[in-house]
Amino acid sequence: MLSNIKSIVNEDVSNKVVILRADLNIPLVNGVVQDQTRLERLMPTINYLLENQSKLVICSHLGRPKGKFDKNFSLKPLVNVLSKITNAKVYFNSSCIGKEVLKQKNALEQGEILLLENLRFHESEIKNDNNFANELSKGCDFFVNDAFSCSHRAHASLHAITKFLPSFSGLLLDEEVKALTSVLNSPIKPVAALVGGAKISSKINIIEYLLTKMDYLVIGGAMANTFLIAQGLNMGKSLYEKDCIDIAKSILKTSELNNCQIILPIDLVVSEKFETNANFEIVSSNAVPSEMMALDIGPKTVSKISSVFQNINTLLWNGPVGAFETAPFGEGTFKLAKEAAKLTVNENLITVAGGGDTMSALNKAGVVNDFTYVSSAGGAFLEWLEGMELPAISVLSNNLDYKFRKER
Image (cartoon, rainbow, N blue to C red; front, side):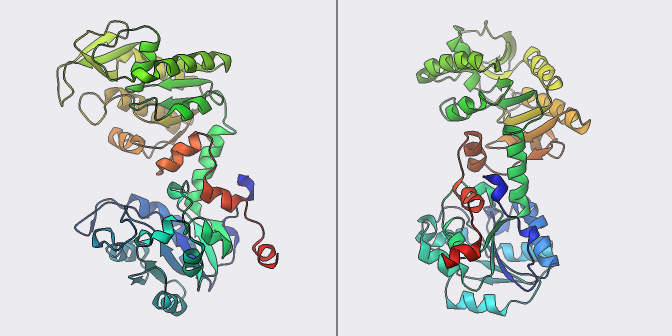
């Protein structure tokens, strides 16, 4: 499937109007950009298109404005940021379709950018409406999807638009697909996955899929508590999912059938209170006091997991192994992140990470730039880990020759 995706870098974009679907869903406070990471990660594609003399139209969503204009979700504040980071002339239109937009597209010069207003100000975007997609495509020669993080959505700007324009992937999307394909479909073995977080229920499908792909599955965070209870241990006041105990037992059995070794905590950091700088103890997993809760993995578990890292060639990381946002319960996550980063820098380990709080945890550990690849995607990353096809990726990979489709 993925081998059929065509990258925009193989096309002649000179003097062509290219509409780029980006993910500019970035935090704004009073119109001021708080974090421009997602914009920075788009720069390889933007630079390629500008350097090759295309006329660039950028479209994106921001937040969930429920199909109507809301100034709090306007993309207009990004004009100055985009202008500074690209050193290009950036125009803005307060809509994304219509005669005025088409007029601006037609007036673009090579190396200039037109930023369109929030796609989700139109209900038709979320409904994957063909008419809306057709309007969006007017005046453009090529469509480029560089929004992997949105590609689990069958929205008009990602999916239906491919019916009206020759469609290609951008460099960021290429990177995401390559990294995730390599770690799941063709990893250098042995391969392990670290899955953390609070609930098994939110990651059942991911865990079940990974059991068929991994040699080791490291489970941390509050979800590990449910597995430990499934093994007959008492977890005191720790967070766990009573309704998922049988599921945890089933997963443990399935792991044996798939020859996938599950690694669970052998010691834990426990406390009576979940608050910053709370008093804590380190106890064995089979000796959690009845009045305490597990909030992080202990040093013996860190050592055990580190040994796994040293004996594998590929690591997939999704989620923290403790309540890393609250000191001192992030130490387990940070130590493991630093160990994985050290092995990566020394070229002894390939590390691919993403989803949920993963990037935040790796940033806090100071190692996000040392991993082989860190995905900026959330929901799309998680659905990929479940083995699901992403609609906006599938429509690219199944994309027949555009000329043939137009003639058929």
